Amino acid sequence: EAQVTQNPRYLITVTGKKLTVTCSQNMNHEYMSWYRQDPGLGLRQIYYSMNVEVTDKGDVPEGYKVSRKEKRNFPLILESPSPNQTSLYFCASSLWRGTDTQYFGPGTRLTVL
Amino acid sequence: GQQLNQSPQSMFIQEGEDVSMNCTSSSIFNTWLWYKQDPGEGPVLLIALYKAGELTSNGRLTAQFGITRKDSFLNISASIPSDVGIYFCAGQGAGNMLTFGGGTRLMVKP
Image 1 (cartoon, rainbow over the protein chains, first blue to last red):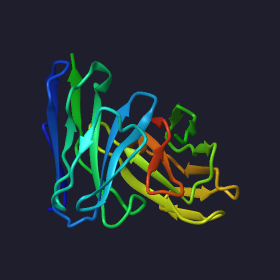
Image 2: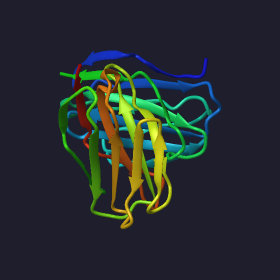
Image 3: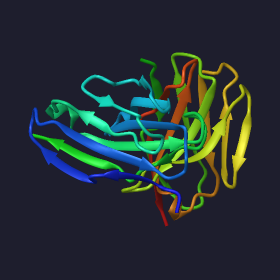
């Protein structure tokens, strides 16, 4: 089954404790992206990747890192999480570019205390 | 960054009514997209618009790419209960970054 998976689905952590949210897709897509969703703000793009080893900043990259060492995986890293990073995070992938049909993962709800 | 203003923020309508929502931008977009998000799920693409003036339908949904390239609207005709959800517009400018609107929460009363 074609899908985007994210782990964990829920995470409660404390300020400053490094964490990684994994994202994996099995559709051989070139384009992958991370978004955060906050009430009233819609989805805001954090980082995206057009291909392996190619990543670019989105609208709100501060406090986040990503890597794209393999086509299927695009982890989101928070080196020193802060409470303002409490949010719902979505990973997405598409065949070539962001305006192709993007397939979204199920979301990761992160709470930083 | 770029900003998209989506309105209305929420709508509570009777089943069978038509719905209209729109997005406006302070800058020009080359592509407009409309997504729907069901509770507990990620967004799903409904309609993609690639050319100014383009009018595209997907079943009961119709969306248009504004002539100025700074706006787009989505219409839903004859709404049904399963139309409930949050609808997002998104635009792509010169780069590959996508900007999303704040969403329109649609509630349908049977």
